[in-house]
Amino acid sequence: MGGDITLVLRGVQRLLTLDGNEEALGAHADAAIAIAGDRVAWIGPDAQAPDAPDVRDLRGAVVLPGLVDCHTHAVWAGSRSDEFLLRLAGRDYSSILEGGGGILSTVRATRACPEAELVQLCAARLLRLRARGVTTVEVKSGYGLTPSAELKLLRAARQAGQMAGIRVLTTFLGAHTVPEEYRGDREGYVEQIVVEQLPLVAEHADFIDVYVDRGAFTVEEGERILRAGMEVGLKPRIHAEQVTFTGAARMAASLGAFSADHLERIDDEGVAAMAAAGTVGVMLPGAMITLGDDPPPVVSLREAGVPLAVATDLNPGTSPVYDPWLCASLACVSMKLTVPEAIAGLTLNGARALGRPDLGRLYVGGPADVVAVRPPPGEPITEAALVQGLAGVAPALVIAAGEIVGGAAP
Image (cartoon, rainbow, N blue to C red; front, side, top):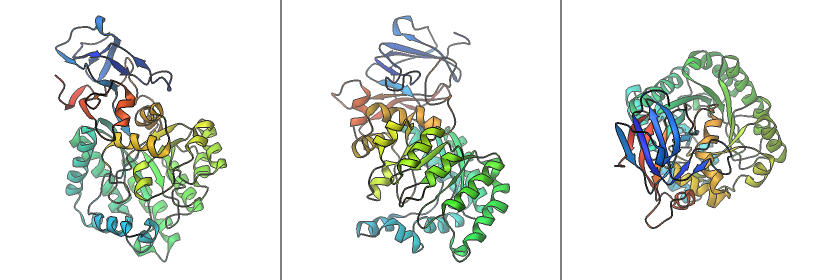
């Protein structure tokens, strides 16, 4: 088994390892898991479970890999609750953004916020995600839009991850929108991103992202920025085809993007390009429903073989969602994902979107990131009962890197 066993999870009536056939979710019945340090040391029948100093009884729970939230904007200051009222009154998001609200209002508040306070705010949000079973989270910048402010956000995100005890991967999103001071000089801001921001932030980020859409950046601008980021070692991702069709998904796939996110208005050529490149499609039902959008063409994406991830898109305005289980439910109800697709989207494919095939699955020698979730009262011990619950489930146990960090399983 290798190493001293420190923790054993027993009585697992439904174990989903996500290691193997994705449709079957790597399911096992009456199983146990042994953990040594921060690694999975053994998986097998409960009757053959080894001894350990700490043994937890997980009867009644579905056990699966720690969740991977592959798209968040979790580091920001300020509130956009006033814009919620505007949208309820009929304003659309693009008009709010073009009028200086939306992202721009958060930029003003975030620029004014001290870094130490941003760390605290982000850590508090990450702890909320961890309490729902998330053990890996991607955090984007994009609310600074100056060299020093973008650097501040990326540093704060990593510090917050350390504080919250959660694995954080960071994405540089200086190309979130054109800031107010550059509204008359778009080319000047693109130049600043490439020449000033990227060299300063590159060592503090894992990915580069661009928001290509109406009111944000063009496909040509997005390609230039992504290529510049790739030249300094950042992995490309993109916000694509959300508000209007642009061709951004096809462009990003041609660059080998790890993911294209949103995709409500992607066309057949974009779908084919993503499938050919192995680019993950990240479904963000929180934003879709908040903005009243039509769903992405999930059937086309599925039939083409595009891997589908599901994420919260946690942000202050268009998706103030802290619960990935709610997003899984909404992805099924509003986007017509299957239950296995939703579960794989929160785990295996979320990890694929981050270029981390070692995460989002349970296997011997792999990271000991585990979540055990009990279905609502009276429901069967199945993943369908978890996803049907519309946020009515809560983890009985959350383990990150072999350490119990949440839940209350005996």
